Image 1 (cartoon, rainbow, N blue to C red):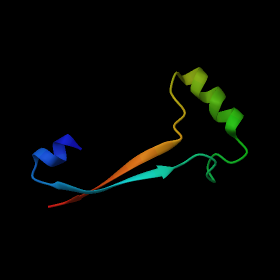
Image 2 (image 1 turned 60 degrees about the vertical axis):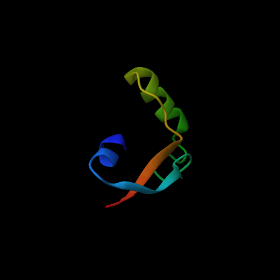
Image 3 (image 1 turned 45 degrees about the horizontal axis):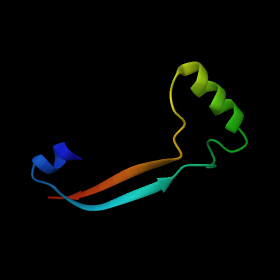
Image 4 (image 1 turned 180 degrees about the horizontal axis):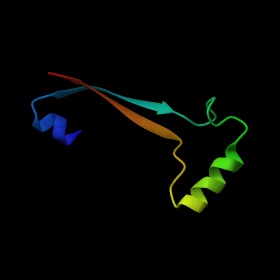
Length: 54
């Protein structure tokens, strides 16, 4: 976000997308939790989408 703003863009909107219990993870919560523990990464429950305007 900071790099885009330094390049002359201004932030128009920030969207927070809930990805908990979406189609890709439905009925597989235990599998994703196991993969996260084995792989050493976090399970994200949301993601940010930044919309910029020049």
